[in-house]
Amino acid sequence: MEKKYTVFRYLAYSLEILLFYILQGTPLIFPEILGGRPVLLIPVALTVAFFEGEIPAMFFGLACGGLIDIGTGGSIGFYTFMLTLICFIISNIFRDYMVINFLNGMAFCGGVITGLICLQFLFFYVFQGRIDAGLYFVQHYISRIIYTVLLSPVFYVINKYLYKNLRDR
Image (cartoon, rainbow, N blue to C red):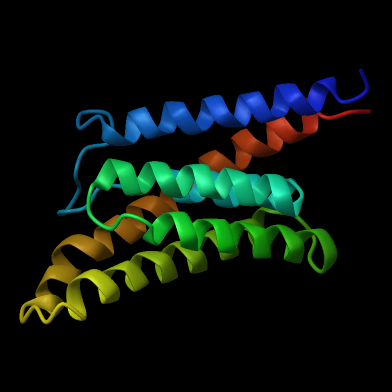
């Protein structure tokens, strides 16, 4: 009985992931701005990893990555592997070495989002030998990075609220 809030919190995170997966795929809710749409599940996974232990963070990263891979239909396995690994590492860092606060969280979100999306671009666009890679990055990927980073504080606030109010006392 002492772990009932943990179950509710994990259920709330799961519902949040499903809700934002659906919202991410709906074109009129988050419209394309300057050629890019946000990848909402990256900041969801990262902000869950800030507050949870390594193993739950890893599984939520796995779920978010799998849904991103399924939803985009392109790079099956890239986000699944990367978010699983990154969420495990971030959870360990914030549990042992860093203080969880808004500025640290947003700095990590900005860096990881930028790195992940740029890495995806390198693997699936540049290394494929496409000649117009620079133009495509400017037209589609920069706006995707900025759009996703700008929405990250919303997920930080949501997941901080869930963690603070649905934990065992």
